Length: 460
Ligand code: ADP
Ligand code: MG
Image (cartoon, rainbow, N blue to C red):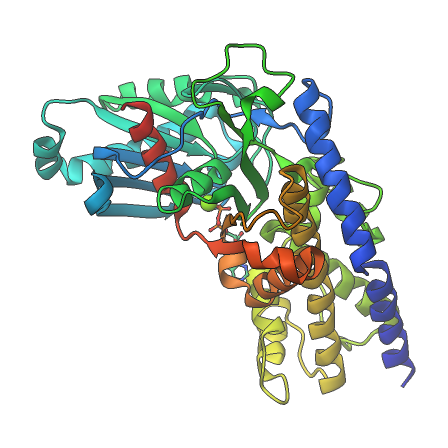
């Protein structure tokens, strides 16, 4: 009927505007590599900040002792301790606890957030007091802190918050040293710990994977947000003014979520999402790719389709009107529905959006919208990875040099069609020969353990 035809037109327009042919992705990859160089050249030289992490030595496997990690991402918060047994034994024991960050803390005050973190940590430490006291052997507890927001580091264990991203906006924390904030909160809890390293999840993923494999060159996150870190030659960083580190290497925290290029296929839906976001004009690449936003993009398309075509009938649309109501795990579930009549799509539409009585034809359109949005995200993500390889000169066949890209984050881990599409697109961009030497590895839980490992390599 006419309704379906109008709805089909919305889908067709979306498909066209979200198209990511290989030629476009190659332009995106080149732009990413170019922005990387510009960001290394001078402070503020690019929207991609290319922040120095001050991590100049990555874990080798030889680390020994008991170390702690804290991981504050966009949604979850984790505390962990890891007992390292050196090259032969590696990770002897690892215990962790995860909690969801109470939403009200994401827009409260700095002392509330860090107070919460310190109290969770104190509780965790108290629970295992006895056994670890023996292992510590009189030494102070060493902690690595994974804080996944843009930080301008002043050393490996200090740095000021540049801005919030994802769903966080705690004004009084911007410009403050996050380690000092944490240290103050820990003192209030009577917790005697030393913060040996401040990193983010991308650096942590790189470190966690490097601990097991020397050929890991980059750590990338596709979770609530997205970011990447990689190992750069210190003498290839013109903006670095201090003495070169002994290792000759420096881990760069790209903050690639803020990447922008005119080649990015930005639609009206993305523009409106951005305009109404907590950080308009910023993190445009992240808003096209990451878990916080994919569901919201789909919601906006469904809303337009519904308003123009009336295809969802006379259902009450108040839920489809609500920002961020449709979340990425929901679209993932619908996208992976393999039932012949798309029963799961029907259930989800009902459960989440209050939409009932959809035709199979309509449900197929919903799946296609999920597919268009997720595929665009995965292909743009692959172009970013190709950009890093291009910058590292590892995009051509070089005497069988192996390059491993470690990837973590809830989106990559759980959204199978996203991760599969990312990997196949990377192969498509690299070509048969080069892709033989490039491996994408899912580095599960690297970010928390990575902080503890960097704390260990610092205290060596
Ligand atoms: P953080 O970014 O807070 O460290 P994670 O890496 O665990 O957190 O990623 C969480 C994000 O992963 C969620 O915001 C969500 O967008 C995405 N995600 C989680 N589960 C799924 C799922 N089943 N399908 C698709 N995306 C998911
Ligand atoms: Mg995380």
